[in-house]
Length: 196
Image 1 (cartoon, helix red, strand yellow):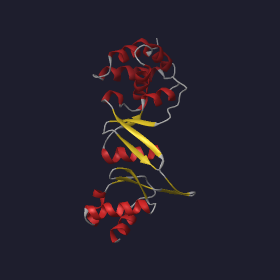
Image 2 (cartoon, one colour):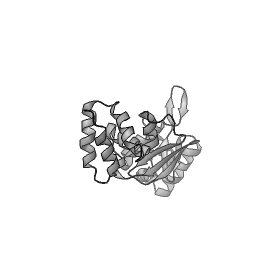
Image 3 (cartoon, one colour):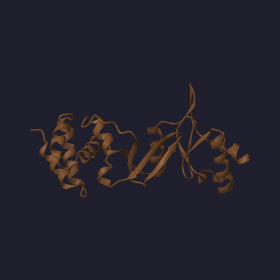
Image 4 (spheres, helix red, strand yellow):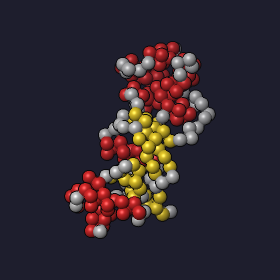
């Protein structure tokens, strides 16, 4: 019980963080910390998101609720030193290549693939190759082109080119050449869509 209270005092409810029992070894043994975290889940102070991983309940002016997917994934990235980006289908939808909205929350990661459970929500993390994990416009375009497939890549690249500035597209062309593992058809699609 003492360990539970000590952990509760250390939890941050202002900022979303991800915890494991090892984060509280200074308060007792790993078994005591694990039991205390389990008790805090039952008390509604934490969510068990994966085996041995917990996240805080967010307290706002409308009461306690689960953290947003974005906040949770940012906390997981920070904790584990990994990259997490939207799935190829989600990027294709965001960039206007398809009106279809993905039903499931799927993200690509440089870490181990898993399914996070946040209340009734499931968030799937799928391990992906490095060339699919770029951040910013570059990564979004590459994932959207990968979603469109080799047959429609050039057509999709031209549609995406119209949405980016010439400077952004030039940076994308330069960056894609550096990606050694990217399929050649993605590199060719980006080259065929060059403005001017």
